[in-house]
Image (tube, rainbow, N blue to C red; front, side):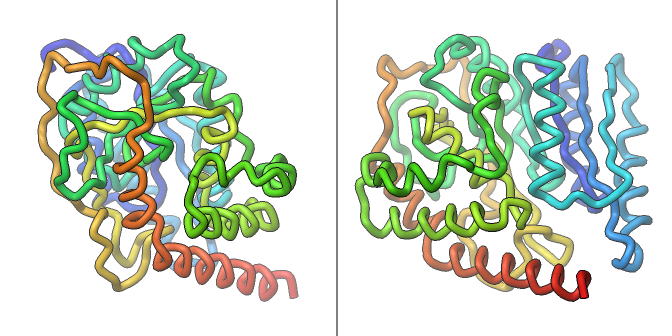
Length: 313
């Protein structure tokens, strides 16, 4: 991209300077005029974490282009759920729309233009809740256009508007009513998928400050009948699987992680219809939201609750 990016970038960081610097260098290539930085604080019982957080934040000081850098740094550890959600609350109090990257999501350079153009195109279309950079179809082309529409809101590199984020609720207070009304049946039309998501939302409803924020975002999008833009090629590579991972720290082959990226072609070919791609969504439910991830989610949540009991004793 020859010109500076007009759309504000939101960069969410924590304690991984080795991945943060890779994402930062990609951001530097497009030189956004405004950069919001959201950082969680260290867990002081974790040896060396304060130093890792400091080294990660130091990368932001390397901004060497004309850019307004606006920081929201927590000095205490809020945890993933509270830090990301409160950080995005803060960002959307300041701007109407933004492109969002976490510290382990490395975008293809065309990701930024893709988001910027579609943020403008669907700015006032309440049917669309987000624009994703991730495509987890494992090489399957789902459309002849540049993107398709999905019920799933992939968050490894994405963009959205204040009008959509205002429906976000970390505590998913509507869940009990939604569950009693069998609303998920009409959204998913798949009994196994319904069971999966009921288990997820039950756990979050009981422990909203647990391990994640993005399932609540999926819930918010579904409760508004929203659709999400998914590129026809993968635009973001997640490199977060490893010892320092917060939500992914396990030794298993997860096929949708660390996928290579490729360029999206411009000018974009816009689909002439706004309809969910059901075969693509069924594939995502099976591949991304399968039983393995549900088991991992429950194991992580159980460990956090056990740790809390130890701390409270």
